[in-house]
Image 1 (cartoon, rainbow, N blue to C red):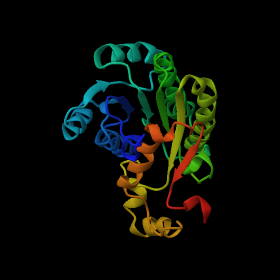
Image 2 (cartoon, rainbow, N blue to C red):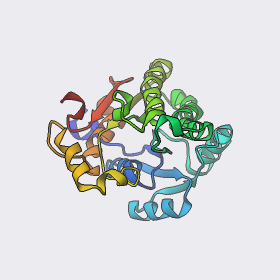
Image 3 (cartoon, rainbow, N blue to C red):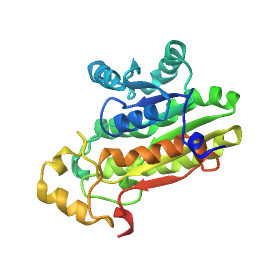
Image 4 (cartoon, rainbow, N blue to C red):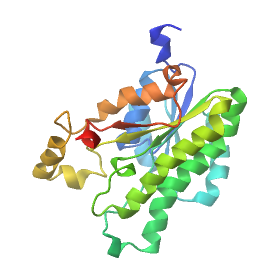
Length: 251
């Protein structure tokens, strides 16, 4: 296999939950540039349509990932209308920045259902068809908080810590059938979710200074890792969590 084909996704169909904005959208663009056909999925149809227009030929699938009991039925509809995916990117998330004392059962359920339960049930819905074809990729979005703890992020951290172990368990479950599961753990990137941090110039600068590279991430910094973990180049890599954090976790 030549070096170019190692990183090509021609003929592959990638479903990206949370693909309308932020990290999910950046990954959708990266996989599309590598030749994949994209379906962007999420709750806000208008946002998904705007994202699909910028991608050029993406499919839009409105999907509330917090409705855990409905995931199997929704996945079946998606496969029927858009085609069964070869690649699943679990990027949808909901979070609240709250200290432990402020966390309610509703906040806990919403965060953990969307951030941990949904990636499992979405992957499980599509994995059998991938296993039958003998090839597939599951790419989860972990976090710095899969390893580190930050004040005000107790529920988010619990969910993202779970994503790290979920990724390993997915690999153990499906990789013998050609379906590899890995995760990207991003550092600090400017998205709607991190706007409160980046709106404060001093805070943003301090976070960038804590990295080995000396700056915060730009969404384009995720492109290479995402394509690598979804492409044939990573055929012998599974159950891993790749920190794309500029060295934040090593300083």
